[in-house]
Image 1 (cartoon, rainbow, N blue to C red):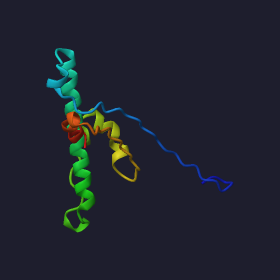
Image 2 (cartoon, rainbow, N blue to C red):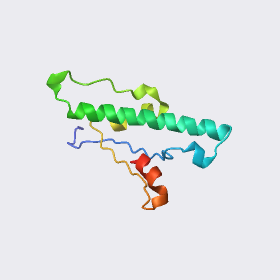
Image 3 (cartoon, helix red, strand yellow):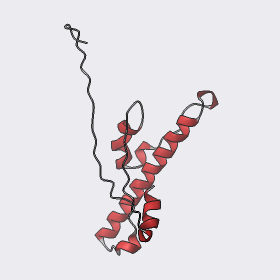
Image 4 (cartoon, rainbow, N blue to C red):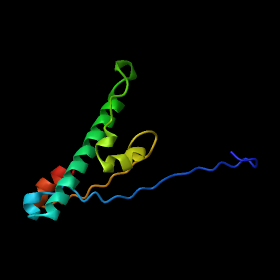
Length: 111
């Protein structure tokens, strides 16, 4: 609060393209592309673990041990998103899925 009675609020907007789950067989990645696909998959797995830990903490009553460990430091991605995922942040995630039968496996993995 300032002397004139106004309040200043600050926020942050993070826009990330998570590239989706990299299916190495389907993309036929080799060399650097294969290494990058593995890194993307590890980051997405770590993000899933963080979301799982946060969801289990949200459903657990405080009387049963409080918060469990949230593995933010397992990946650079989750370190960057820690402020957006935990605390009092409002977070929106958008997933691109296809209604095509040929894309059902990819859409299921995305969800």
